[in-house]
Image (tube, rainbow, N blue to C red; front, side, top):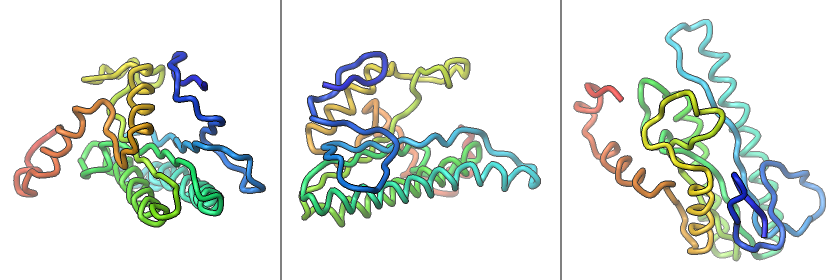
Length: 193
């Protein structure tokens, strides 16, 4: 069995890959995971916009390329799992992080398309939408509802084993984002969060 964050046990898949693919040959991975970091805040200064937007576009382009390579390989094999990490931020654009949210929303759309394409080929595609996770990167941000990495890893493993298509981690983010998505635009424009 492979181990995830802080030693949390992942399901006993024979091989696990995280974050990269050479695209040559078939190493025989049963589970392929794609996590790309899109971190920073928006800015109202136009001179910094393209720098910040580029930091989102490049990881998304890398994810799209890698996922295409992986999808081709697993489709030929006729089995496997692809797990991609999007975010609740990709569900609806917000003033505080719309560039980040756009990249994560694009990734969720890509995974949705792959899921439809590969569903009849024996390949499962799971979109993970983690909320705030207590890591070194986020520790000083005082984020509400920050989950422990071991709990997140356990929830991801459960989502893989259950055959889910999309999983919010922790689960309550699905309720929060359902409410956010249902807000009429006239009200949403006036809220600040």
